[in-house]
Amino acid sequence: MLKQSHVVLSVLLLVSTAPAMAATVLTDKNLDQFEAMIPKLQQLEQRPQNKQFNLQQHCDWPRHYRELSAQEKDSNYQAQIEQLVKQHGFTPQQFVELSAKVSWPVLHSVQPMLDVSRQALMFLPAAQREKAELAINQGQQYHQTLSGCLTDDDKTALAKHHDRIMQIAKRLGGVEQILPPGMLNAGGK
Image (tube, rainbow, N blue to C red; front, top):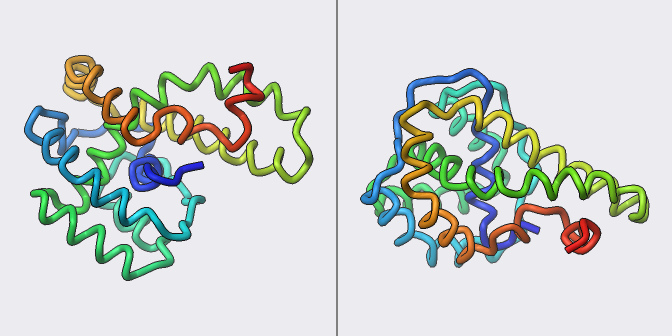
């Protein structure tokens, strides 16, 4: 489900419902830096992954980073990601925040599909249904919590960079990477 864009989507777990001061507002410069990382991120994603992270309800990005780090089972992978983000001019905390914000427009655009997918769950076999329901709940929670963390500056930047962000998402697999396996077809597409 989240093969190539797992890092970006895992970082969605880092958001919450109480608005907070944004440390990393999207700019042309940090989007350039983020895009430059994509090929290396995709290489690092060629491994078994922990796809179920717990998202806490707060907008404290350094705390989100610590919480996600504690949930990552592969310390070598964690070290590689940290080294990569530093090479591209970010702190790991900034990368977590930026990744969450870059993923928001795609996550926002798939909310109607997640709703339709939830209605189609009854047609899936029990084991697949359970996994799909967990993924749908997680996607909806990410959207809700991240929406609560976006400042007015973030919203302005997201509107300004919307087309570029959607192109980044397309390179990473877009909507298919967010929906649970089999749900794109079950949702009527």
